[in-house]
Amino acid sequence: MTHDENLKILLIEDDPGHARLVEKNLRRSNVMGEIIMLRDGQEAINYVFGDRDYARLDAPVLVLLDLNLPILDGYQVLKRLKRDEQTKHIPVIILTTADDAREIDQCYELGCNICITKPVDYEQFSDAICKLGLFLAIMAVPPGRQDTYE
Image (cartoon, rainbow, N blue to C red; front, side, top):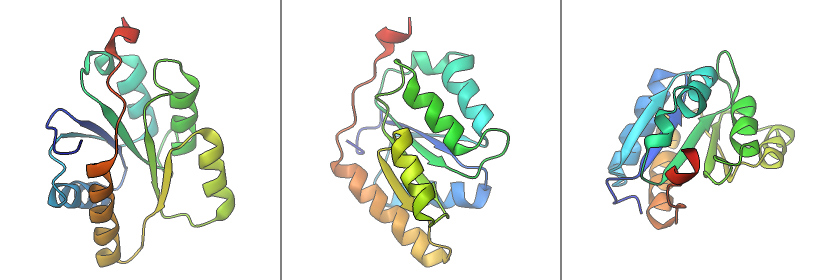
């Protein structure tokens, strides 16, 4: 699936260094689709629900979501995505530095599909994202549902 150039990934990450590192290592793992970078939770909600650009995406979508975001945090974004009939099917992968079991449990309770703890070490973080890219290569992503947005 990731070799498909039509795959769209929404990367919601406020740290520009982390965002660049995620993109670089996904590309190294042969993820060729478009990566749309958003910097905060409100921007993500506006992108998906506000200006309706999302409704025009005709390809599978995957969300990579940081928890510690300005304005609206990742929990609020996840909750909004998963409670809406039009977006609840979108796979959401949480990328977080939190390793508190309660926080991770909360992510799964809110409907995330996968929760990945970001290692603090640069090399370990790069390696984790490369492995994520390899995982995405075998993961089946639901088809776009643009007809439900009109």
